[in-house]
Image 1 (cartoon, rainbow, N blue to C red):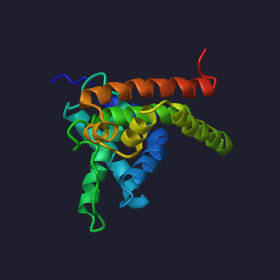
Image 2: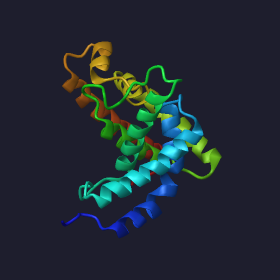
Image 3: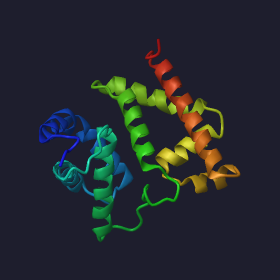
Length: 195
């Protein structure tokens, strides 16, 4: 059987991603599923890479995989399952269970914003977070509502459609994409990242 990835690729994946995604992963899961403790999230993160190795060995990873999104998606699914088993679990609003939510889009957008915001210096990071908050507020409505509801609130497109009185979820998706592109441009401009 011909696999798109060799096992040497797993070592490279671990080298490239294990350390760099650890803190963003832990922060994301902790915010999304506060019912889980930090030790549990750490365990899930390690288990995520074990699952990736297994998927590679079994030839279940497509060529051209976007590793950041793939790692987060597997880890998030594991975290949801772990949260459901917890006696502390009350209600987890799963991104993947909402009829029209594209979980991969959420992860990729979260990660792309995370990259823009990444900074070792805490003062600079704080300034960048302030810029992000400011730029979201400067977007015209319904952009602010759509982006906050979708990325922070975990609302489905149907829920947002009802809130902003649109006629279809497709029109909300289209507007969300336009709003996100505007936000990315505004952040890059504010951070001096555009030429």
